[in-house]
Length: 399
Ligand code: PLP
Image (cartoon, rainbow, N blue to C red; front, side):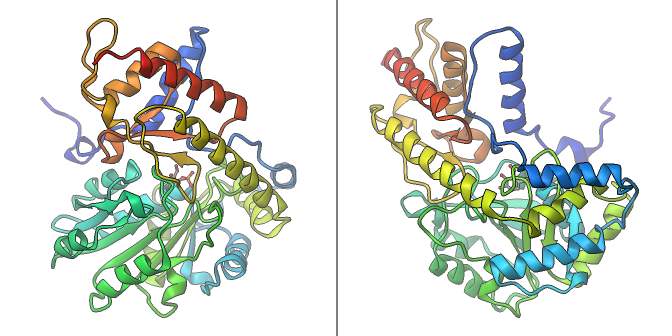
């Protein structure tokens, strides 16, 4: 007899976290591992932020805080959103959660339910469909144009907006593609929703500080009076703080209040020490953000130069985040030395793992069959070694 709830059976384990644990398993066996699957900066948390965390521990910032975050952190977030994104949110329009993932999960919980449809653009971040499904709502997938930074296919989008549509989730810069949408594409989406006050527009901006040679513009800044746009940001990628777990939302007061209530009855509050350190991250010296971004840009160009040297691999130039998302379709249907046919990108990703120790994430889990995601949030040396190994390994495939 099935004893687990339908709710939990509606969702899948996180594919990216699964690859992280596969890499750890290889490492435990002392096998060489080249981890290109990581979704986090490889830098330590900047020292001034570490110091704020230590100060918090030693000075009593170690107790429960309000469910939606401390007032001081909300003030810091308010300043940051004004400084970097030209967004004006009142303090009661801001809520702090245990990471951006928690923010997105909770917003889906308070807004969506059975019979609702929520639009997600493919390729999508692995967690979006599950955040939606767990509420009982239905994720609806819209195609994108890979030649245009994975902007929406507007014909498909118009078709998929129905009377049941309750939300649209936008993630630019994107995980897994690194695509950054143009202002024109964003305006077009907003225009399509202008007469639909029942549609919530989620803007997942967790990579907002990581755009290369193109400016970033927060979606809510296009329509400052549009109360249906929710802005999601996080300290994770911007300040190399993935383990601290601080994310936040700016948006409609009623939604924000509902999320704070839900948190009060689930996690109680975000970690008090991390909240204290996040104030320093958001309002302290921002030089570290630029320094990390400059390194990522160099690595992006480095990995693209290696990809160019691999036959039959197509890869767009991503304008943001720290991923490349090449199309490996040419290699599907080939065989390895034991005559196993590599039918899908997942088969290919597993083949690369076993043959070379290079850990990647298959596009199958991002709704992009044929593609494989490679993260360049790792050293130049590892990027070089991994890409050389991939090249050799693909050469061994039999057609
Ligand atoms: N949104 C996207 C697109 C992501 O890639 C991630 C993390 O990988 C998150 C949100 C959540 O990050 P965090 O929960 O660490 O803030």
